[in-house]
Amino acid sequence: MFRNEGRTIGIRCHNNSNSPLYCGEGYPTRILASIGLSFDTDKMDVEIEKAKKAVLAGAEIITDHSVSGDISLFQKELISNINVPVSYLTIYELLSRLDKAKKNRIEKNMALELIEEQAERGITLLTIHATANQQMISNHKKIEDRTILSTSRGGAAILDILMKTNEDNVYWEYFDDICKIIKKHNIALSLGSTYRPASVCDAGEHDFLYWEETKLMGQLVETCINQEIPVMVEGIGHAPIHEIPNIVRKSKEICKNVPYRVLSVATDIALGLDHISSAIAISVAAANGADLATCITRAEHLGQPFQEDIIEGILAARVAAHCGDIAKLKNFERDKAMSSARANCGCHGVLDAAINKEIGADSLIRYSKGKKDGEITCSMCGNRCALAYKLNDTLV
Image (tube, rainbow, N blue to C red):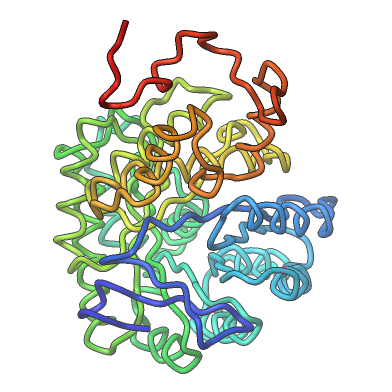
């Protein structure tokens, strides 16, 4: 599950260690979808059903963002109900346990034992926020012109604790111990970004905090590569499209070209329409080397997404990722199949090449003029369809 000096990694599914999901160099952009319990009153079965529908829509990794409720029980149920890798951010459950124990500092043993427990539970992609440390706190205290300091829920919580205790981050201090646990359980590690830009105004070459954190991530990546531990880095959030190519390329270079994951939107003003803003950003990021993308729904910045929001967000991300992959992988196979079918059969093409066959089939019926001689007829061009002419025909 570790290839090409970490440029390609495999993430295994809890119940199928022989067929990992490969991502990175040479592979299409992988899509992650998020679910989870935000309040004690949230229902487990509702979130598990969201995860099932997300997988059917094309999500290749499910990320649990649970911060409340019985997280351990929920994850066991989630893992047993889906057949794709499940990822989690270890700090979320640790914060929940700290609250219950009425503790205000992160202890080494508690943190490392929880990582082991989560791996044993079946989490096969684990995110840690190691670079939310005292070095970065010193850096961010120098900054006066950043619009939003941190958009990372886990990273910001760690910063809050560290600034109160003046201690350093246990995930940074004991990273070698964490690597031993990751290797022991044959899972993959994701380095969470605390200072990814939360405003398009902040992103770019001038974003001091992002680049300083990326350099620290590069150090951790090197440790992982030396130990042949599958690792990925979490990259940009909000970023304008003209900055994305350089950010992705430079970040990957700093981080030894291991898989790079984006959680991107291309503008800050698409409130209620962030799935569109994200699709634009994903497409540009994938074209320039991003390897994974977390789908953003229209509910981003508003609240928990409904099931239909997640499906919509995944489909938008899949279209965007495919557009980027055409540029990245130069693979036109599906598009060629669709275009050839349109040349021979008309504008509906062939469903086998469509991003989603069900939506394609439903749309054919919805937008048709009905059936003629048993075939669905298009309602667009009448008798003036350009596709009715072949290359050697004479156009009149």
